[in-house]
Image (cartoon, rainbow, N blue to C red; front, side, top):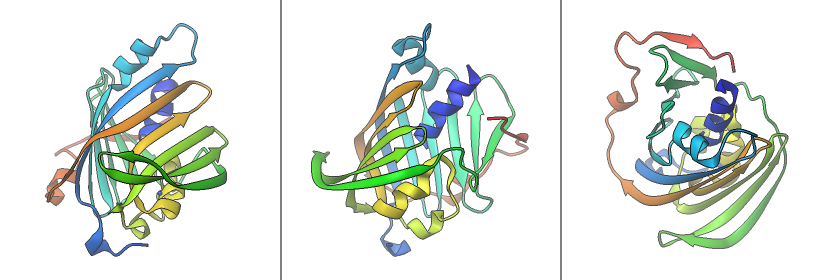
Length: 209
């Protein structure tokens, strides 16, 4: 079950000047379709959460969910690690951002594919060893992709290197599930660097997944 949890977490994790980068919060609504016998769509949704608050400032980001098991994830650019907080443990599990168990075999870009929250979005499709990932993004919400060059985990830089923008919708298909994540609001705001700090006296260990 923990392997499933981290497979989904991977899904939750595409050259612009830093001064132009989006800083703020994006709220996503997530839906899941399970392909695992004995694990229903509702159970998977409860585990991972159907609401996600995603924050980004420079090269750091944090994702908070209403899931029963996955609580939050934090990427710290300074050490290139993704920290995951599970409800079942006080210890934070971390993954090395430079390592990626997946790989991208081909990419396809389709211009003006759809409109989300008033933003005209292009569609980037990544055909990966793990399945197919589709991202919909607007160049009006840029991300400084150079800050994430070493963030290979979850195919994040593979996406950013082509898109260079905040995704407004993601459709991630794997052998275990299909996840659709759609932005319901985009809120530019100034965020304090302390928001992306690890909790005081946090205990951490390398994730086995």
